[in-house]
Amino acid sequence: MNIFNQTGRYFALMLKVFSRPERHSIYLRQTFNEIENLGVKSVGIVAVISVFMGGIMTLQVAYNMTNPLLPNTLIGLGNRDSLILEFSSTIMALIMAGKIGSNITSEIGSMKVTEQIDSLEIMGVNSASYLIMPKIIAVVLMFPFLYILSVFFGIIGGLIVGPAVGAVSVADYINGIQYAFIPYYVTFSLIKCLVYGFLIASIAAFFGYTVEGGAFDVGAASTRAVVNTSIMILVWDLILTQLLL
Image 1: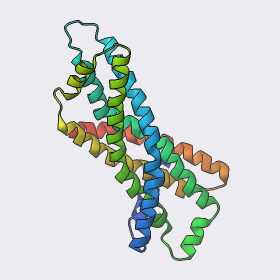
Image 2 (image 1 turned 90 degrees about the horizontal axis):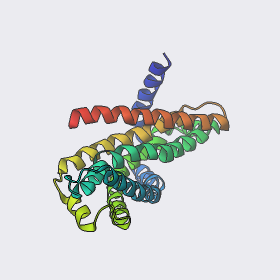
Image 3 (image 1 turned 180 degrees about the vertical axis):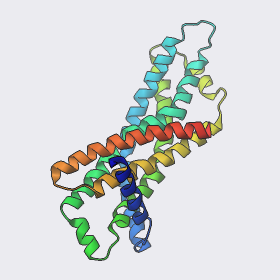
């Protein structure tokens, strides 16, 4: 019953978030602040992780291609498609669920336990909409850009590591990246990114907004938010893959 109760409370909160908005100028300013805090400040970790993962995947594909009949261009192709289809969207979303999700939950949860949200309600402000909607919009807008950066840096990582260790030549790697490219794969992953962005921001905000107790409970809520967000990301990855591919 707890699952159904939590699900009902989640949808009730989302209904409150997207109803009775305050002044649009306030939302616009808040949204830009959240884009900087949640999106722009995540570029560094996305770039670093993607460079290393691109290099690792390039080496793994190269070392598993023991058949001499297979051309070395498949190394670049394998790294490219792995990044575009799964790593830079789903795996990066799981990583961002830990960084962005815990940030959102702890911020809103701290306001909840210190009764700042109650103060907003007393002043007649729709606290759910004021606090949560800018975060959802910011994450949904920024996630596709983070995805594109992740693909770019992942390919660069493979281009650096592969030739450096002698696993593949620069020419073969670049030819592999260009070979049999399917633009729809990017469209498919961008759609997934929009869904993941909404899940990360909304689920994290829900656990922060509904937390009860003190500082210890905020930490526990952050953990629950990351776990539940990760599960939902994988569930929706399966659903969207079945529907769109």
